[in-house]
Length: 425
Image 1 (cartoon, rainbow, N blue to C red):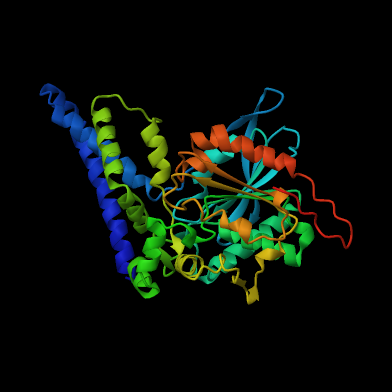
Image 2 (image 1 turned 90 degrees about the vertical axis):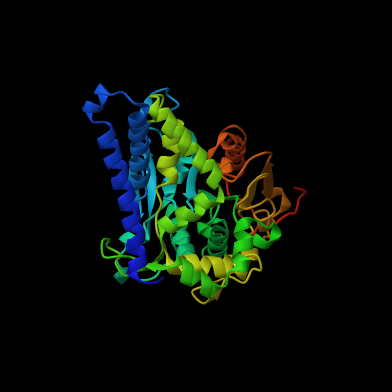
């Protein structure tokens, strides 16, 4: 499976389906069929439009699409996405709200590198922008990164987070969503040990696998069943010559998408069937709920092989974060070194990716943080996506997070040589 043939074969299948959709749409839309009205042509045209759009989205990086933000002066302010730090495998970007006074809350959103682009957090960014100065880790598609740029595994990822936090300074609130939660915790511990003055004020962990064994899910069960050798054989492929990263070993986005869809195949099949019927009846629109969701969901990116494999082996199988034995560049990270950072853990009651119990394990790993600076929230009825981007996030979780920021915006005052006072949380 590591040859370029399997990678190019998947791309060829995708390209062929896009072409079939475009051909069906063009053929069924030909004016002459108006002389012999038949619903089959409308259905064929609708199938073609939906199919062409769906398969085309798989190789397109979505745009953030955030144009303006209403300021406290009740005026619309233009939003400019600017790159603050540029690195081979990911950039630190800033949503600069032009003409707005500096915001007291500065937030670093750590986006997951799990098959989708950072734009998966678009609604999260949109909801925070009116009240915060927002920065995001914008990870790059591995297929576009030349082999000469070297490797990128979870140790490199953690070091990127350390560099980003250090660059932004201590007056910062870090929010890690899903997959990067354990690595954001490790990065904060590294700063606590090596550069305490650069630590963020707060660390919010949302639905992340701090301890995957705390609550079993389909994801953790898969990690137990499959050996690393089997996983490498089945999942890793070599980028074809079409892209700048030709020859790089990756876990392809198209393969990841297939696994995402297979987890809820009935739901996706029904959604596309309903969309095709709506399009045939002229009841769909360019920006309807289906297109808004699937334009993002179908846009996938490749992960470097070493990042994917090291995540499975070290975070899920060996539980290095959960056991506090994680090593970065030969140095063992001690999560217990975190003492001055307030921690907020958020979980969803119906999260089938990182089940309740996995993320809250972070609180037990940080005995040096006073109980008064540790918080957790279990959102009733919320799934994985809902705790950072859905109605539960907007109506219930976001206000709690903003209050948490405000309550811990200043560094804790400690007398030299004095121990941190423990109070009931």
